[in-house]
Image (tube, rainbow, N blue to C red; front, side, top):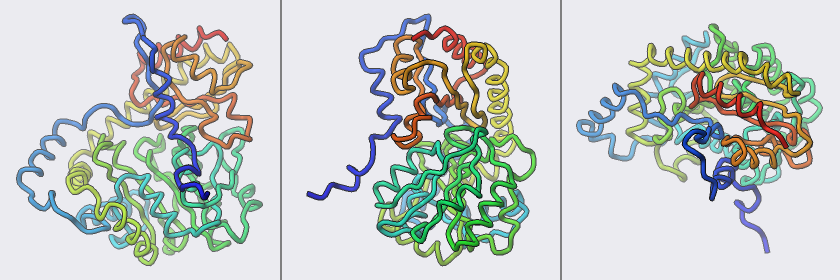
Length: 391
């Protein structure tokens, strides 16, 4: 019997990890520190919620079907702001709105790949990317990153075959947090173009990049859309996780293929969420700058507190955006260690085994911390607990 598409992949890691909490109690003086998921748990700022309330009551169009590729005003705004931020020329017909960034990835793969095609993913990878490729019947080709957690275009070149349709990069990276150098992204762009394949760059965490300048110059290339597909999420920037609004940028011909996928899956993106994202883009630049400053301060706090773990044999492999990626010193798998930490230390985090194929042993030593929802005091408490772990 042929197995289903969903049976071709693994259980969603965040959901699997949450089950480790079943039957475990946490004393009042040591509450659970949950650093397992990279999503804000706070509501959007009050001004945005008030705007959403107004939209719901006064904009009747917000309750109806809309264009499959999204609200024209939002597509225009993204095109204008991205053109200014990246120093390039982006037009509204190169922008599509999706129901979250995961759907943007799924739509891009649907427009690019057929059964048995291949996509190159740097390892450690974002697990939902791997899950969708599995369910789409597309082969994942792992590209092992260097010690700095940055992939090499030269290494990727050796993996390209006649079945390769795309290379996927995430920067700032999930799960490692590292910000890929502009030269790295340019090298991958050149490689993909030379082989006639797509370069998918997921910039979900672009708003929390530590660099003041544009993180790359790919959009400055007048022909960027022949190769580049950029993905984005509004969930992190404006805390719109429940509204599921993302974006995909590519050429109009490919967008027409993406539209077929979106029309059959959701018909149109969330209408209220799109209007909320547009309002945020037009009114919350100062607020978002404050959010970025706070995340960068938490990143600095990771560095401030890490020496205590380093003295015990831990290594900090990467840090940035919402993430710190660690290597532990213990003689057990990170999968076992992560489950022990729930009861022993009151910490819920994800093991490196969830971010790479089972036959790659490096994941046994690695752990991901998503620190978007813990402040400096929480980071201090987290590292204090980790320093006391014994196995």
